[in-house]
Length: 114
Image (cartoon, rainbow, N blue to C red):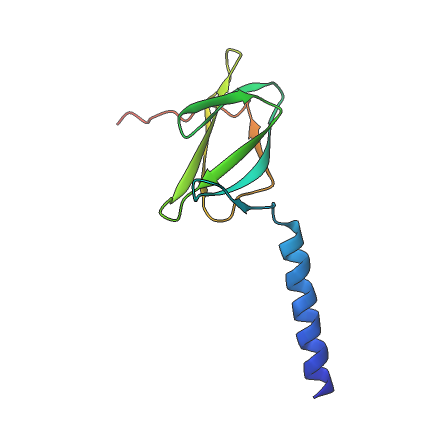
């Protein structure tokens, strides 16, 4: 009995610490759920678009939101310099991450010709 209680308490404490690390999500006035997400890129800055709308230049904080029917939020990093590739992240929601990172030196994906 005592061992069961200790295991239960450790499980609850473990879950609580995982929950504390999640970004603070909140309900908005329009009924969506939102969280503030840090967006970074390296080695250079990038233009950021969220669901097709311009959001700003990295590094930045951006409020991302979703509805009950939303399947994903799309965040795109567009390079500001030649020889860098456009990067796309589709975030399955919920949850939303604390941070997003784009490596702007990733090579573009080339279509194979057969």
